[in-house]
Image (cartoon, rainbow over the protein chains, first blue to last red):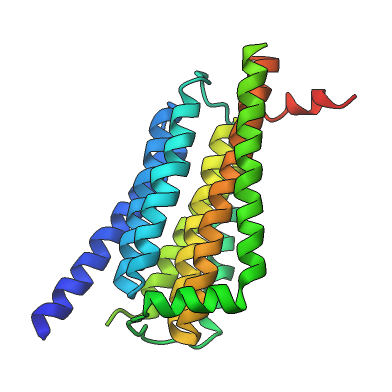
Length: 163
Length: 100
């Protein structure tokens, strides 16, 4: 029992550090390809934490759809846009202060919810699918329309390239 | 069992890093990457809060959010590619030249 808790805390700490270091690489990397790859690493770490919360299926969905498709798409698109990253050097200090303040306000707001220890979640995928189809059919329709729009947009952009 | 505070701290730190990146960069790709870091922070927070309040709704909402964010990337990246094709740069200040 004690060993399980130590392993859980150790895994959480390791994944959290991995996420934060990857996030720093994503914003500080000189080359955008490394930044996009670091974003993929952040996505994998977040999926790990999501799995630790008990949402195994969401973690798998995040890895397949977000990291596997979206971030890979960004990475390959960046290959076409070779360019040095430009930064606002003069407002770096202000931006850092802004980020710190934002993190403080964010934490205060969340802590006001009074949530203590997180519980583990176990959901039946069949039950989730039933609820989505019966109660959330309209958002599902919007997602389908959005994905179809993306496909049409992709075709239009590709045809523009031919001209 | 992990204390929720630690999850919130990781989420807040990731959100702050993303906000910092979104403010200092001029390159549209880097801004998009920073905004995606903020999205990841929010997704973690959503599921952490949902596990306490309503796991089923959190599960379903997160599926929709991930799918729509992937769609959003599918919209923004081609726009950036088109911007680069026209101006040979992804500097967001070049985009204002698109106005009539």
